[in-house]
Length: 78
Image (cartoon, rainbow, N blue to C red; front, side):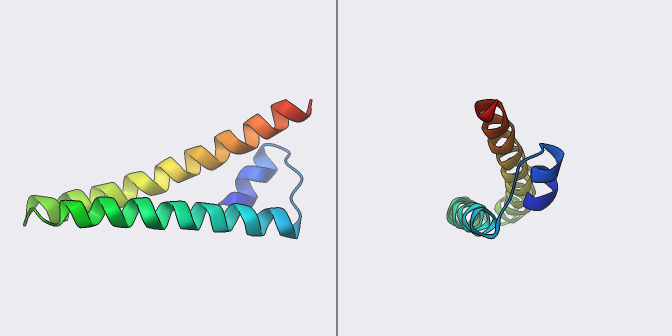
Protein backbone atom coordinates (compact mmCIF):
# COMPACT_ATOMS: atom_id res chain seq x y z
CA UNK A 1 0.00 0.00 0.00
CA UNK A 2 2.74 2.45 0.95
CA UNK A 3 4.72 1.86 -2.22
CA UNK A 4 1.66 2.27 -4.47
CA UNK A 5 0.60 5.49 -2.74
CA UNK A 6 4.12 6.86 -3.03
CA UNK A 7 4.22 6.10 -6.77
CA UNK A 8 0.79 7.69 -7.23
CA UNK A 9 2.09 10.92 -5.68
CA UNK A 10 5.52 10.80 -7.39
CA UNK A 11 7.24 10.45 -4.02
CA UNK A 12 10.86 9.26 -4.13
CA UNK A 13 11.17 6.26 -1.81
CA UNK A 14 14.40 4.76 -0.60
CA UNK A 15 14.86 1.81 1.73
CA UNK A 16 15.15 4.02 4.83
CA UNK A 17 11.94 5.91 4.03
CA UNK A 18 10.03 2.69 3.33
CA UNK A 19 11.17 1.21 6.64
CA UNK A 20 10.33 4.34 8.62
CA UNK A 21 6.91 4.77 7.02
CA UNK A 22 5.95 1.11 7.35
CA UNK A 23 7.10 0.97 10.97
CA UNK A 24 5.20 4.13 11.86
CA UNK A 25 1.99 2.97 10.18
CA UNK A 26 2.25 -0.49 11.75
CA UNK A 27 2.91 0.90 15.24
CA UNK A 28 0.15 3.48 15.07
CA UNK A 29 -2.40 1.06 13.69
CA UNK A 30 -1.54 -1.66 16.20
CA UNK A 31 -1.88 0.57 19.23
CA UNK A 32 -5.04 2.38 18.14
CA UNK A 33 -6.83 -0.60 16.66
CA UNK A 34 -6.06 -2.94 19.56
CA UNK A 35 -7.23 -0.33 22.06
CA UNK A 36 -10.48 0.35 20.21
CA UNK A 37 -11.27 -3.32 19.61
CA UNK A 38 -10.57 -4.29 23.23
CA UNK A 39 -12.83 -1.52 24.52
CA UNK A 40 -15.61 -2.64 22.19
CA UNK A 41 -15.32 -6.29 23.22
CA UNK A 42 -16.55 -5.42 26.70
CA UNK A 43 -20.02 -5.34 25.14
CA UNK A 44 -20.84 -8.93 24.08
CA UNK A 45 -22.52 -9.37 20.70
CA UNK A 46 -22.67 -5.85 19.26
CA UNK A 47 -19.12 -5.20 20.46
CA UNK A 48 -17.79 -8.07 18.39
CA UNK A 49 -19.54 -6.79 15.26
CA UNK A 50 -18.31 -3.27 15.99
CA UNK A 51 -14.78 -4.67 16.38
CA UNK A 52 -14.82 -5.90 12.78
CA UNK A 53 -16.14 -2.57 11.56
CA UNK A 54 -13.43 -0.71 13.49
CA UNK A 55 -10.74 -2.94 11.98
CA UNK A 56 -11.96 -2.18 8.45
CA UNK A 57 -12.22 1.55 9.16
CA UNK A 58 -8.67 1.62 10.56
CA UNK A 59 -7.28 0.14 7.34
CA UNK A 60 -9.16 2.79 5.33
CA UNK A 61 -8.04 5.54 7.74
CA UNK A 62 -4.38 4.52 7.59
CA UNK A 63 -4.45 4.40 3.79
CA UNK A 64 -5.95 7.89 3.71
CA UNK A 65 -3.39 9.11 6.23
CA UNK A 66 -0.48 7.70 4.21
CA UNK A 67 -1.88 9.25 1.02
CA UNK A 68 -2.22 12.62 2.76
CA UNK A 69 1.38 12.35 4.02
CA UNK A 70 2.74 11.73 0.52
CA UNK A 71 0.61 14.54 -0.97
CA UNK A 72 1.78 17.04 1.64
CA UNK A 73 5.41 16.01 1.21
CA UNK A 74 5.13 16.47 -2.57
CA UNK A 75 3.52 19.91 -2.14
CA UNK A 76 6.20 20.96 0.37
CA UNK A 77 9.02 19.98 -2.00
CA UNK A 78 7.65 22.11 -4.85
